[in-house]
Length: 318
Image (cartoon, rainbow, N blue to C red; front, side, top):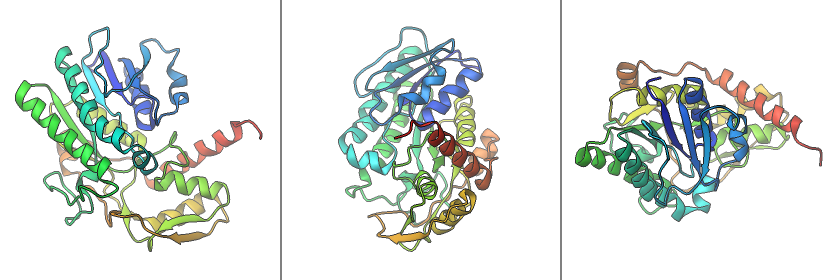
C-alpha cells in the first residue's frame, strides 16, 4: 500500500467499514468520517482499538479537515439504499454535491488522491447493454430515484472539473450492486431483503415479474477494485462490478435454496423507474487495473447468510 493515511467518508457504512478494515490491514492509518445518519456505528467497533484508526462523527456537507497529512481520500459518504435516499432526498443530493466538493477540497489541500464512489445508477434504465464507461445513460432527472442518480452524476462532473481546473489527482469508480455482511436487512436492496425474509420464514417479495436483472459483486471484490483504482493513476470512470447477470426471480430462488428456507416467492408492484437490466462491461478494469471479481454468487451469498445467522444468534432474546 503506497498510502500512509487515508480518509474515508462514509467509513462507518456497509462498504466504507470494509474499506477501513482493508486499508488498516495494508498498513495505512485511517480516519473515518461519518455522520451516522444511515450507518451503524457497530460496523467499526472492531477497529476502534486498532493503531492508526480514528472516527470523526461529522457531516461531510460541512467543510471538514483532518489534523495529520492525508495522501488518500475515499469519498463514499452517501445514502445508498432506496429506503435511505427516498427518506433523505435533500441530504442525498447535498452529500453528492456539497459533500463531494468538500472531499475534493480536502484532497487538494493535502495533495492527496481522491477517489469518488459513483454507481451504476448513473446509467439509469439503460438502452445499451452491457454498460461501458462511454455510455451516457438514460436517467429520469425528476423521478423518485433521481435524488441518488443525479447526485452521483453531479459528483462525477464535479470530480472531473476539479481535476481539469486544479490538477487534483482524482479517480471515479462506478460500483455495481455490492452486497455482503453488514448490510441492513431492511435497507430495501434485494440481497439483504431476500436473506432477511428467507431466514424469518417470510415470503420473498420480488418486484414486477422478476425478470429484471442485476449484477451482484461481493464486497471483498469491490474493495479490491476500489483499492486498485486508488493505487492507479486513472481518472476513470471505471466500472467495478460482476459481468454475470442474475434475474431477481432467480436470485430469490437461490437465496431460498442456500438458506434452506420454506419461504415462497410473492410478486409485488415494481418501483417507478426500476432498471430493467444492469450489467457492467469491465474491459477497462481488467485491462488497466488487472481486476475482475473472484467470488462466485453462491459463495458470496453463503458468506452473507452466515453473517446474518451469526448476528441473529448473538442478538439478545426479546
